[in-house]
Length: 152
Image (cartoon, one colour):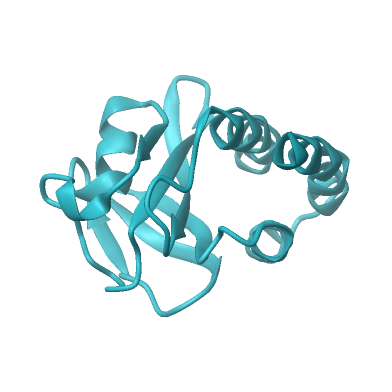
């Protein structure tokens, strides 16, 4: 229950970080820093932005990451393609997993929408197996909805 409370407390902070901000890269960087510092189970947290037929690395916190991901590839590309959140307990068992870091063991990817189109994804990795659940899904989906305002 503590994690759910933390997500709820973060909602107004995320809203404040993006309100009236024209620097979208800076806003996403601050949101990723806020999320990364708020949860111990976040090993890597950041954004991939849709650019044509691929996702491009955006602001993040954590180890170095992949620069681009094709639609349908890995957990990020699959969440983009399916237009839905994917929570995967063991990325080593995900078909076509992209190992940007050998330390990652579980992952959650949440699409950010502009209308019906995915414009970005929030990607969070953990060093632990089964680190994410429905509480993370609900919290990050609320945050994705707030962030979507940057893409209007």
